[in-house]
Length: 109
Image (cartoon, rainbow, N blue to C red):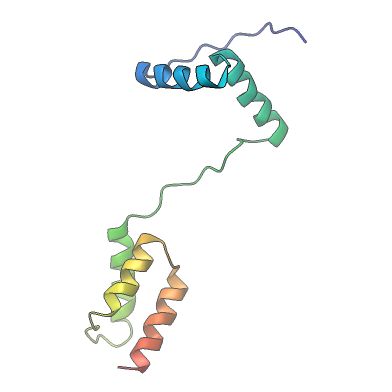
């Protein structure tokens, strides 16, 4: 199959230089790398890697969980709950797990 189409792309110079160095180590040029990328998109019927929306900010998640804690009766919550809030805010546990852990801890308070 002959290659007869052109793609012009503008990128940051530093990115281009760094990528060219990596590709040189791999023994391929930029054109071949882009051709591989396009072939993978065609093969996978989408991008060949996962694309996600940015995570909700830690401050927003902490605020949401703190508000949920206040719904449990307006009690001030013990400092040990900060660990649960921080795990949730970092995305290490989901909202339901955080609430479950807090409810379980409230039973022991």
